Amino acid sequence: MILNPERAAAQAYGELAGCWPGNTWLSSTADLAREALSSHRHGDLPRWLNAIEDLPGVSPAFSLDAGLLCLGAAPADRDSLGSSLMELHPWRKGPMSLGGVIIDTEWRSDWKWERAAPHLEMTGQKVLDIGCGNGYFGYRMLAAGADLVVGVDPTLLFVMQWLACCHFAGKLPNYVLPLGIEDLPPGQAGFDLVFSMGVLYHRKDPLEHLQRIRELLRPGGTLVLETLVLPRGRDDDLMVPSGRYAAMRNVWALPGIARLECWLRGAGFSNVRLVDVSVTTTWEQRRTDWMRFESLEQALDQHDSRLTREGHPAPTRAMLFGTA
Image 1 (cartoon, rainbow, N blue to C red):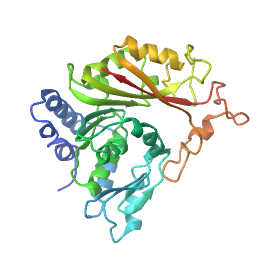
Image 2 (spheres, rainbow, N blue to C red):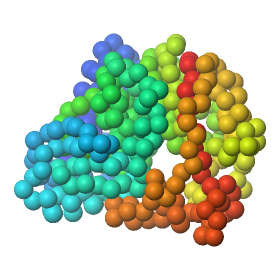
Image 3 (cartoon, rainbow, N blue to C red):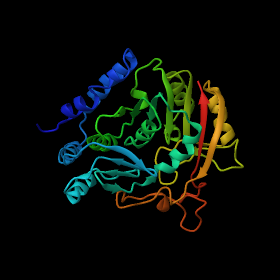
């Protein structure tokens, strides 16, 4: 049977509601995800679905090797597999090995995970990951003991990459839904943890984003927020780029760390704590064979790497936790 959007949606989300029996919010969200994928009209969708259908049959597997996410046993024809996976270019979050083909993604997402992991207790947790990309972090959460990860990301290509991952991993409780946070049903969802990594600076109203996250958490649940900030020494400042920032569209505001902490408390979070501040380097985010477009190196001033090519401070990212 040819894989089409309706069939892909049924296979992807048919069992989602059963992962959390009695949670009507998740049941409604699963319906929204099925409808969104079934009715999507992206011009590349047929090509992407064909690439997924062409993936060879493999024995499902799920393991980690020093930060490398390893899914599926290797098939006999690895060259053909590499060509099928390249149809889903660009690959941004990883690294990962699918059927033995190592995908050197744009981001060393394992480094970001290692900054968060020492501060997390994942055992038995139900997690929402906003802006989850292809689900890489969800697999890391499962490996750390999470019971369920529901990821949302409106970029359809990332959903296709997750479907490819599912082909190799088998049925695991890590989902990527073709939705944004604004598409989610109202009301409290009851998650133990909500991750928002690399999202806040794309929101026109950051306080509204944080307040919405608080509604999605159970009382006492934890927000994990990772976002662009201004460098140390500009803790109370706020920068609003007039155009692009580091070649990115839709970067609305970069706060200093103290101002960001105020935003979190203003959104109703307590026990706000800063766990990491890191300058993003071209070792962590870079162009590779699996992401051939411009990356961080091309977004920086070619004579002064402390600046973006627009003259702004180069990317610094902070990770903060807060309690709902």
